[in-house]
Length: 337
Length: 176
Ligand SMILES: [Fe+2]
Ligand SMILES: [Fe+2]
Image (cartoon, rainbow over all chains, first blue to last red):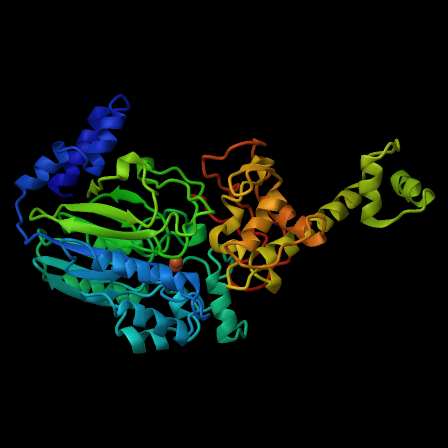
């Protein structure tokens, strides 16, 4: 366990219920509390920079569908940022029905970004042709790269076991099953063995002080498995990454603002550019990071993009940039992870 | 033949509809048999099943842009049937839940509204209300987003298993 987490755990044990409000603020990093001091002492300098996340465009095949414009708006919003992000991560679900025309349309719109983009797939991109079109357009779905001292990792977290062969489903039927968030058929998804091996190999020579950002479509914790707000082999991923002092996980799929921290890993969700999803019936450790309930009469409410500013101590200032007024006062100026 | 069936036969009505009529009417009668209750629930599940299907896009007239109720309301979450009738800003007056459904169909989904008295609308209500069973009725403003109950079966209601994957009556998803 790193110094940071040990001190966090001690602090949790010590403070009890009385100081809960303060504790939560400190755990989220709003105050320069005990957690941040420890992290600062542990050293590890990197070049500060900014990156952005766009996610869950869910493009349909119709011309001039409203979601096309919403993704265009997201691209324009990121391009207009000052300072500009060094690059953009796209969090999966470019397409709604996984068709090539939808993926091509997404690539076309995203090509207007004035900075490089890295992308991982969502379930809506994948299950018509098992990723063929996606790979042809966007390349490998498992990747890592280093940027200004930070090691970025992308994994495909939406792999399910084969439910279609024995049942004799057509590719379109398979896709339809996967399109339903609460689909009772596929069960929980994950990254599976091959990517776990890849990951273990990818980080084996990195020291514990290396800043790690891992990027997946679904969260690396059991948020709400029924809606696949989970990754089945997240425990194995965490085990592989347990040697690092601090790991940041960013993900799409949940279409809402969300923060969690378990052990050495903080976890932040992306807003979508298509529609917001309701918060599932679970209690959150950090309920103050929930966005306002979207007003259905405002078509772009509850959607947006997000930017993360990493400082030289590998702290990230997370700022959601919604299209409309979606953030509670707690979230207005961002929060540090 | 049970007494209750005999009474139904005597008044010249049969099947599941009769049970509902007798239950809501002024007839004094013996309690329903297990079998009759099961028939009534099956009739309800049939409506819930139709609502479930429509909720996930099986009625093409409900949308011209591909969107289904389920896009934004998985498990009918945040459809809030228990908070209606209530004032909706888009109408500037108090409306019933089926009217809100029609608002969604006509606006975000760019589809054709459904007759509130139709079996189709009844089915949508049956599905949403079924998944909100046990949640207190609270007409008025819903400034809070609400979710349905934690579901019991793979679909949230009893139905014939598809035989695919984890979709079965016996499967209990783990609430987290
Ligand atoms: Fe999505
Ligand atoms: Fe997704």
